[in-house]
Length: 273
Image (cartoon, rainbow, N blue to C red; front, side, top):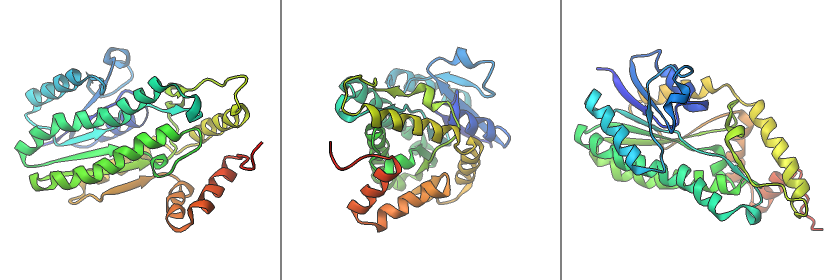
């Protein structure tokens, strides 16, 4: 029987690329979106209404798939939002929204799908995190924190689920050429802010990284291979060699040397004003 795959956030970007690529194989793929009707002409897979911040929509979407297919073999926790800004000037409600979508939301989806997978005595949960979650990046600190929280929580969750035949892994992408920048929350650049110049320059750099990012198809291919692996690793990283190298360097360099390297990369002045 074909494996049944659920992808949250399947209407655009990496989620859409994964879903449409998996459709070339013998999978039964369902994507989700908060507003599926907006994408009926542009997405080549069924889209269910699901908002990861609203548990009732999660329950309804998963129940619909189980009713139609009788099982869920793979959950790809992909839905997420970007957020940038000086932490001091980022509104608290926006910080909470980012955690609701990038951390608490995925946990709610896992909680909703695990009982069915336990009943099946099988299942695979793939959490799409970020290479940014391995380090605190200036003006992306909240985003880094949300993805890091999911990575660490999933390390524990993975061990708790093993006795039931349920597997879990984290896949951390680097920069991919998607529309993520347009959907990010950007803390406003305040005219009198002490962060004005450096934050403005960093925003330009971040957008350039996305525009020059990898093809999302590469992420889709990586996910398909992971689905077919008998025993997935705890962590995977998918991105440019430089981005993956940054994780290695964090392990081998002293904290201060690594911080200095990041500040140089982002052209930040660490000498005070």
